[in-house]
Structure formats: C-alpha cells, structure tokens
Image 1 (cartoon, rainbow, N blue to C red):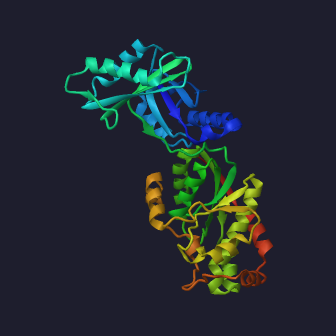
Image 2 (tube, helix red, strand yellow):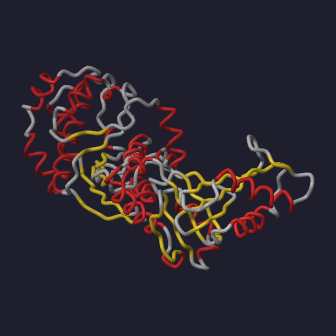
Image 3 (cartoon, helix red, strand yellow):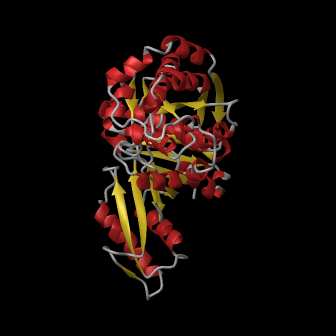
Amino acid sequence: MNHVICHYSEIGLKGKNRKFFEEKLIYNIKQVLKPSDVEFAKRISGRILIKLTSKGGKSQEHIQRALYHVFGVAYFAFARESEQTIEAMQKTAYELIRDKEFKTFRVLTKRSNKNFPIISPEVNKKVGAYIFKHISSDKRADLTNPDFTVYVEIVEKYAFVYVEKFQGPGGLPVGVGGRALVLLSGGIDSPVASYYAMKRGVKLDFIHFHAYPYTNKASIEKVRKIITILNQFQFTSTLYLSSFADIQKQIVAKASPKLRVVLYRRFMARIAESIAQKNNSVALVSGESLGQVASQTLENIYTISNAVDILILRPLIGQDKQEIVEKAKEVGTYDISILPDQDCCVRFVPKHPETKARLKDVEKAEKKLKTKKLIKAAVQEVVKEKISF
C-alpha cells in the first residue's frame, strides 16, 4: 500500500475554522510518524491523505499503532492508488481481494469528485461484477452482511482502493482546545481524566504533589512513567513536582482532623493555579468522580473549588470506578497506577474525614494557617522537568 487515508468526524462540522483543525491534525500526524516513512501529508476533500515512502509502505504495523494515538482521526485505511478510470479501479480492487479468505463480498464507493461521470452505485456494480467474474465460483456478492468489503474512494484527481478500516481514537486534535494543568497523582483516575481532556483537544501539563524526602520517590517515578504513556497522544509534556510535606504538617498541627483532606485539596488547587498562570494554562484538570471517596461529595468539591478562581475540569465526574478502570487498561496506565507507592495524599488522613465540609468552617480553619506564605514557599520550590515521548 502506498497511501494512508485518514477520516475525521467532528472536524467536518467546524465550518470556517475547519482548516485550522485540519492543519493541527496534519501536524500531529507528522509528529507520530517517522519522517522517513512519509512523503507528504495533506488535506483533500474532507480527509487527510498521507503518501508513504517505499520504506513507509513496509512499516504498516508501526504506522497503525502510531495513528491509533492521534486524536481527531475517526478511522484510517492503508490504500492503493489507482488511475481514475473504471478499468483501473476494477483491476486494483481484484488484486487486493484475490488472495483474501471470504465467502461473500461487496463494494462500497465514496465519490466526492462529482465530476467523475459514473455515480457511486454504478461504480459498485461495475467493480463488483469484475471481481465476481474473476474469483472462484463459490464466492458471491452480499450487499447487507458480507464477509469482506472493498472500499473505493474517488476524490479530487485521485482514486483509492482499500479492503480494511482501522478505528482511530476520534475526538479533536490535541492543541486546538487550549492548555490545562493536570493534578496528577500516581493513582488510576487522574491519568484517565488526562486522556479525556486530551481527546477534547486540550494540551496538558502536569503537577504532582509528593512528600519526599519523608517518603520514597515511588510516586514520582510512577507519574513519570504515566506521562510517558500519555505522551503517545500529545508527544511532549512538562511535569511540575511540588513537595507538599511541610504544608501537610502545618495542617495536621493546626486544623481539625475531619477537615484535613479538604484543606489538602484546597492548598493543592492554589499551588496548581499559581503554576497554571505562569504557563498560560486556562484550567486545571482533576480526576475526581462524584461520590467515589469522602473528598468527592458535591459539598466538598464545591468547597475545594472555592479556593481558586481558575476553572477546574473534572472529566470523570459522572463515571463509576469500573468505567474508569476499564479505560485505564485501554489507555495503558492501569498497570503502573496500581503499583504501590507512598502517596502524600494518604499521609495523615483521618479515619472519618468530613464528607460535607462547610466553606465557612474551612475558611475559619485556614485563618490559623499562614496560607499565602505557605503557598508562596511551595511554588518557589516547584521543580520543572520535560518528558518526551
């Protein structure tokens, strides 16, 4: 096969902004493919056409795996180019299908070039008749439930034939939806929340709160590995590492045990907001799911959100744990997330945390803490590192 045809769905609804989305999709496609595999990638009539080099034509497994991680691609196919004549398309279709195992088949044509004189149903009939004439007599056409489908696309000056579609991840190209900062733990939820944010076109940076040197570095190493996996979808990321132990000690010493978890979250949100403002992120992303744990009731989520002015996105808010786990396995982060670590969020957690923290009670507790000073010191000590795919 000498071409890959990438189809999208949502991008086609973008009207005057469609070119911007298409160009970002092309850029992202080029990021995941080896330059030596691609001769060119360009927009043609509602799809992205990738011309492969001779080397790229032999790298289908790599290309397939790479395109599966490009948000914006609804499906793609490895296609053979044909002359834009019925005779050429017939021969190309037969060459692609003759060695396949099947009992029934059909031909489906998309004719976006309306100047081509033969309409799609007629192309189906003519190509199908040619195949039927040249294959063994025990095979037959079936237009409703075939074992095998031959696809023909007639677009601009091109004609392409292929026999298999591969599902893409859908969504929007990363980078078209602005920038956000993820509060990334070493657990299951926040990496999945990251996946869904990227699927809506958001470029992500990450902040991880740890308690080193009071704990080991296991959680830090976990998030680095998780980000490496997530970089399959956005290529490079910035990780901010924030030591949270000193703030925790102050909260434990001066606040009611029942309010600790909510106070932890409010301080984390403030630190993350400060970092987000410095890197032009317009939102935070959290892995919270409504009602999953004590800190994730509506009352507590409201009280935590009230600590900052920045928008907090919660992509998992309506999902249950099993849905999140299944997606984590699909994305590839699950096996890393379940590795043991010493997460700062579980240090000094009371047996019975408040599930309906009132904002006035939390603000009263914070008056005993030097909030601005603690936040400023924590932000100054944040360590920044780049992680590439």
